[in-house]
Length: 143
Image (cartoon, rainbow, N blue to C red; front, side, top):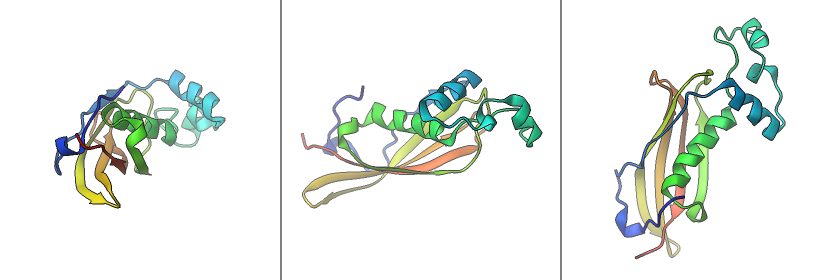
């Protein structure tokens, strides 16, 4: 759970704490399929995935990796302060990949009586390949 964070404690350029998850296992893909209802065999059947060109077998659901990004954000900023969270999927994530999520404060402003921070986030695998880019906004309290 995220600790209390205040508007005065955050500055443009500050890095959010990194989160490292993995290596991601095929079992996680299967469990996510069950939770999401998305049973596309590309995510749970190695033979099928290889037959359609995935040389290493199954790939993760993009939303599973987005969930990892969300976990990184809410480990730093309490969920109740989040106002917006959006991502762009940039690459497929193979099984056994380790995902590192990082980010930085891009903007800090008072708008409509709220203390808003905007942060850019990125998720990369162990090879530095980008899987997700995104941004979130949060409304933080004053001290």
